[in-house]
Image (cartoon, rainbow, N blue to C red; front, side, top):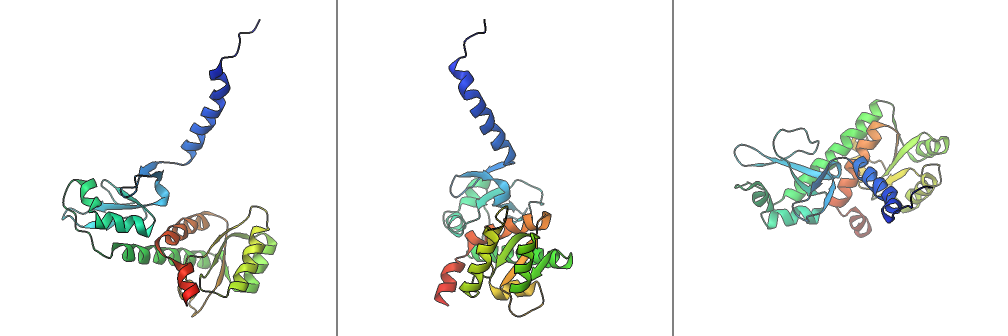
Length: 222
């Protein structure tokens, strides 16, 4: 006769699934501005130089204790205004008043660099017709469109991307002049990047950038 199942047996699979899901998210860190805990890959990392200056470490490569802030303009502005870097580091820290603007520029530059790397590796395509062809053929991993591009064309490609298997991610954090830098042009609205490591890194940077700038509001007011 088999023993009766206890209530704990019913909830154990759910707990195990939750633990597994948490482990898959990778290392977690707490934002010093909001107190929220998140995967550190989606946060902004900073370290303190020996002389006390705050140093951005967006690729998480610098030695030393890291201080983490959510990739949101409001979180950065709060950290500066309330002197939270010094409080977290327990020492005086030199922090520029325009930190949010500087980080936005750094993240945008990193995203443009990654698109340029994808182009040189043959993993990126530009232009409405070429991007549409990649989407139809299933070559696309990430659709990147300029936030200030013509709404109709952006909407058509976004719908096409969402209608494909796997629902390609659509990101619209960069401006047309910024996307153009990766291709040596003056104006680029539509870019597609093949699935892979570069697309994954680019998705992370563009998601950060979306929290650091208000491109939708800028596009509507242009």
